[in-house]
Every structure is written in C-alpha cells, then in structure tokens.
Image 1 (tube, rainbow, N blue to C red):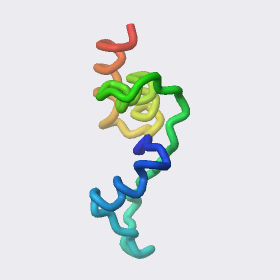
Image 2: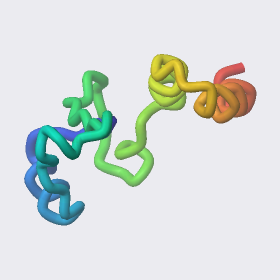
Image 3: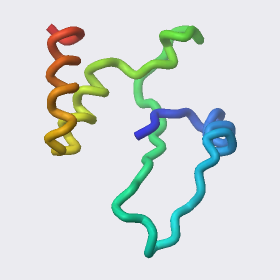
Image 4: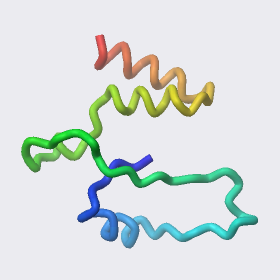
Length: 80
C-alpha cells in the first residue's frame, strides 16, 4: 500500500516506473494507492510519513506470518 495524495500520484507512478501487469502475469502482486485519510498539519519530512499505528494495522491485516515480527517490533517501539 502506498498512501499518496492525488497531486503526487502521477509523479510517483512516473518515477517508480510501474507497469500494469498482464492478467496471466500478476501472480498475486498488488499495489494499492490510497488517499491519506488523516490531516497533515505542515509540509515537513515527518508529515510525509504514515503514523506507526497505520503501518502496524496494514502489516497485521495481511495475515502473512512474515509480517507479524515487524508488526510486533513496531508495536513495542512506537505504540506503547
């Protein structure tokens, strides 16, 4: 998932050099571009980062065992 506003979407797609996969070549890969739903106070480097709680929720929501350890470490470091 990429949390990105409408203004930066075309820049991101151009510079990330992403291409649409053909249906037979997708192999379960997926990239979601999601408009940020939180308010950003100022335009700083920090304001461009997603809150750790959202990252934690995204990692856990995948259900993939490989994501559970980073989610646990993130929770211990930022969400206690």
